[in-house]
Length: 157
Image 1 (cartoon, helix red, strand yellow):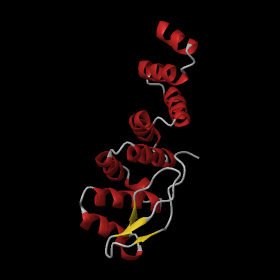
Image 2 (cartoon, rainbow, N blue to C red; image 1 turned 180 degrees about the horizontal axis):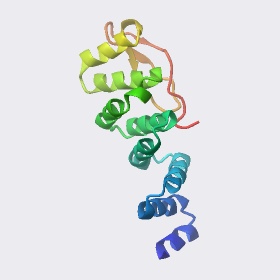
Image 3 (spheres, rainbow, N blue to C red; image 1 turned 90 degrees about the vertical axis):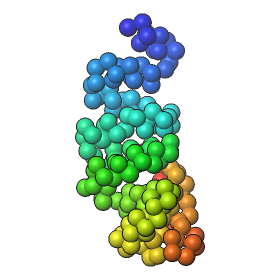
Image 4 (cartoon, rainbow, N blue to C red; image 1 turned 45 degrees about the vertical axis):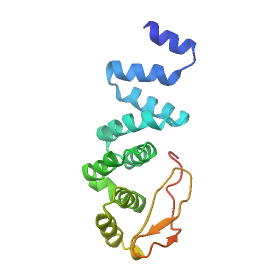
């Protein structure tokens, strides 16, 4: 209780919400915590908490946030596990698929990356390393050419 009072006095709402969630596991506290982490752009903690919210609700927005947070902290293997664990959500957005393809490419699994590009119908397997808020060039795996296709946009809208 003293820690909660201290966090309020120090105006550290994020820490207060984290402690509330950790002590009770309340989904409302988790949602509030994630909102505060998004506002602070604390990708490290988002990479931990966003997948928990995704597991609870299995909403596409939670999948999007989880994928972007994992990417931001270079948790590439966890990002690939996310695609495997939530295939129905994963296939709802081309950017999710492109990110998976990029992850395979990043890990040196070029054939898997190329297959994802071909299955998605992208010419010559275009993939990109997405970053929140930035349009990045895509790498053409067959020719090595760089081209622009789309971006992932902001971390949370």
